[in-house]
Length: 457
Image (cartoon, rainbow, N blue to C red; front, side):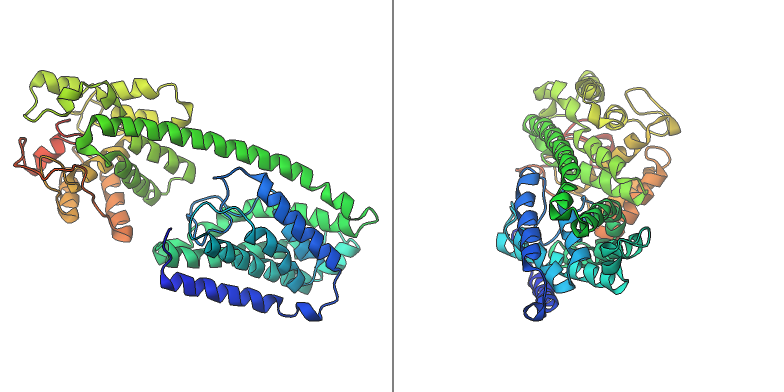
C-alpha cells in the first residue's frame, strides 16, 4: 500500500489521538518507572531480533484479513505482563518504543510505525483497564488462583476485540476491503495465539510480584523465543515455496506470452470460489497454488505450438492436451502442493465425461479441479488475448451457467457468481498486441473449447 487514502490517514490520526488520551494521566501517576522502562526496552529490543525480515507486520496500516496476527511476536507476553502489572496509562507506554522502532518493509514507513504504536497503545490500555477493574491487580499480587485467570482472560478478550475493531477499520479504509469482509474472521484467528501469549504474560506478572522478582519473570520468555524461532523457520519455508511457484509461473509466462498474467488471475478466482464455499484457510491457500500452477505443464509443450498463428491440427491439439499430465509429473514431488496436484492433472475434465486426460465423470473429478476449471474458463473469457477481445463479465457468467451441469460444476459456478457480486472483477490484458480477427471460433462454445492458452483446448 504505497499511497494511503485520505480517510485512512484521518482514521490513523483519530487512533493516535485516542492513544495520547490514554496516556494523558502519566505525569500524575506514581508508578515504578524503572519497571516501565525495563518492559519497554525488553519489548523493543527483543521484537527487533525475534523474527527475520519479511515475516513481521508491525507498523503496517492495514493487513490481509486472513493473515496471521501481525506485530505479535514472541514477546507479546511482555506487553500483556505490563497490562497485568501497571496502571493503564503506563501499560500503554510500554508498547510505544517497540512499535516505533520496528522494521517496516513497505512505505510509508513512518505512518505504518505510528499506526501500529497507536493501535497497540489503545489495545493494551483497554486490556489493563478491564484487568484492573475486575480486581486483577490484587489477584496477581496474592496470587489468587484460579481466580487470577478470570481478569486475565477478560483482558485477553479485550485485547483481541480492540485489535479486531481497529484492524477492520484500517482494512476497509486503507486496503479498500469491502466493509462486509473487513472484520470477517479477524477475532477468531487472533484469539487462540493471543490467549497463549496471555497465559505467558500472566505467568510473568505473577513471578514478577513473587519473591523471585523480575529476573525469574524473564525466564518465561525463553520458551516463547523457541516458539518464535520455529515460527520463523515456517515462514522461511513458506517463502521458499512462494519462490518456487513464482519461478515456475514466470517460466510459463515467458514461454506462452499470449496468456501472461493468466495464472495469477486463475489463482485469485479459485481463491474467491473456495472462500465462498467455506473452505478453511489452509485449503484456500493450496487451491490458490493450484490455480496459479494449473498450466505449468505447458513447459513440456513445444513453443511453436503455443505460439502458432493458425488453427491447430488434430495431432497438434493432442500434443497440447498432454499439458495436464506434464504438469502433474513436474509437481509430483512438491509435497506442500497437496490437493493442488490433482487440480493440475484434471482441470480440463468435464462433468459429462468428454474432457481430458482421463474422461472422468461428475464427482470422479476432484473438487479442486472443478474449482480451477471454472476459474480458468472465466478468466479466459474475460481477458483480452492476441486473437480476440475480452468478453464482458456478465456475458462470461451467462456462458458458464449455460454450460454448468455438462462442462462445469453448477456449485462452483454459483460460488463464483456470488463472489463476484461481493467483490467484483477487473479483467486484465494478457497480450501486448491488439487482437486481430480470431483464427478460431468466436462463438461462446469456441471460447470454452480454447481455454487455458492461445490455442490450447
